[in-house]
Length: 74
Ligand SMILES: [Zn+2]
Image (tube, rainbow, N blue to C red; front, side):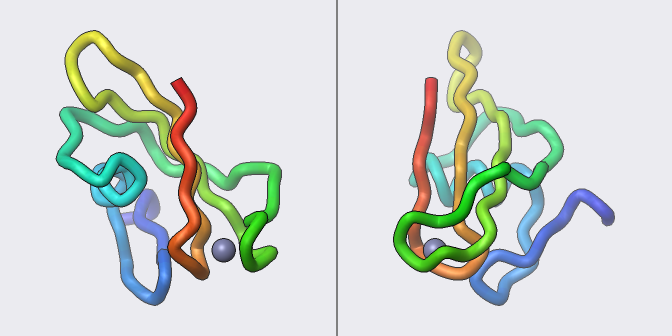
């Protein structure tokens, strides 16, 4: 599927990427897009994914493709 991306050497779906950012399971996730920023830790490419950790919450998550760095924005 075109929506899947490689993160730290593993193919992830939007939902799996959201779960990496959240550190928990999520209800739903939008397609992955490329964020216009570099990782502050390693300078690698950063992906972004919008997701819903719960029915009432929407979060934009950012995750580096090369290292453990991630960030969530509400
Ligand atoms: Zn990084």
